[in-house]
Length: 53
Image (cartoon, rainbow, N blue to C red; front, side, top):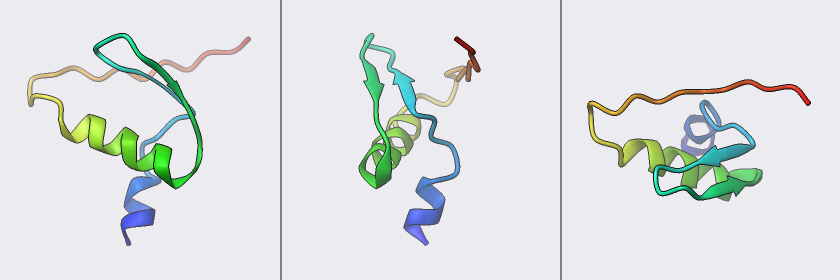
């Protein structure tokens, strides 16, 4: 169950509020991504940017 929950939101790249650019994949990245979102204050606006290069 935890694996399925962790796989819902993550994208391959995360730019954190402290300016870290985190690229990854796999379950560890998904868990870190989810933990990062869970740790944000309730009034934080989260933006997902889709880009094409």
